Length: 200
Length: 196
Image (cartoon, rainbow over all chains, first blue to last red; front, side):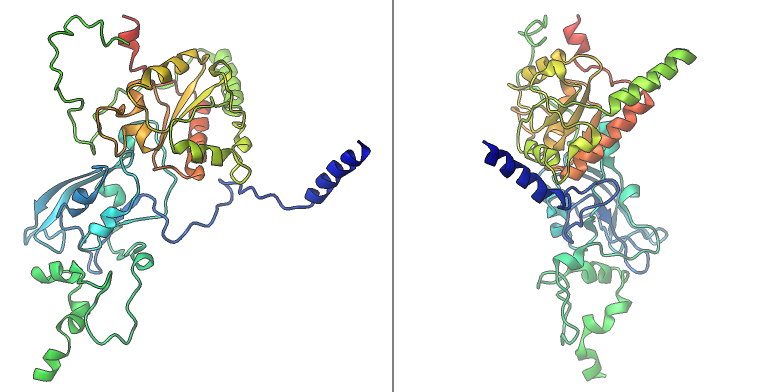
């Protein structure tokens, strides 16, 4: 009997000096994985054009049917994206969304990625429908989001081509090249390769 | 539940769609009024009571699906929901203040959820945790209630599939803010059917 009490007190004494495992969340935060999937962000090219070309591939890939897009045609007066169309309305119902990341996998231009912002809660369900204005990067910000975490960048000494994402052709240059927009200038030598130089 | 007592039950089209809007769109809900003022003395007393209530939200022990695992994780020592005074998961709804609807609510489970909600004493709050409870999530079918806010009034919606414990704690924080501000519960979606 007495030994049991001593044993119990021994446990107390042993645990007495141990640091608590609790992460006191609002003040200090657990370090998130680089591939953490929080709410979505829409990105731009270096020249300020939107990457989203309104192709509906993310909406088609979405298992929860959470993405609503209304596209509109680009005009020479108002060139919004580096393609024929842009998304006039881009809504994501975050209450439907299961944060699986299929949309960023499906996107041919790398326009949509999931950020690591997880502090999401609302009193009204319609407040959790995020609109394009809330998700789009500010003008002048050319961010690729966490794309680099998902798709390792090719080494510097790569002789040719830009399998920027998964080893197959990344459409970001193609859609931009279709209308002579996007960041084509920045990567002209990579896209056209050494053929030009050899002919010239 | 008001399903069978409709006068035109025989005339109803059984194949009518359960939902008339796209999944990505939610029709605008009727927003509740601002916190009502009840005079200087009572307002100050209410503030004190709300402060006390927000610091001891006892949830009902109630897990419907996988979100409940994250809810249990939030109660564990690493995230420690007791820092917000909400660690006492009560087995009886009569001792609970907060109902965390963690998981998908099937049509068969909806009356049970409603009954547990009705058994909770006022004041009571509901936190809808996760995509399925909030909107049906990926389960857009006849068996799952498309959002538990069609059955009981929901105070806070937390997205995620499932939400991490931090997301749940953030939702509880937002609920505490709401209680401290004295914002009333949203209107009861079943009020017309139940009190006809």
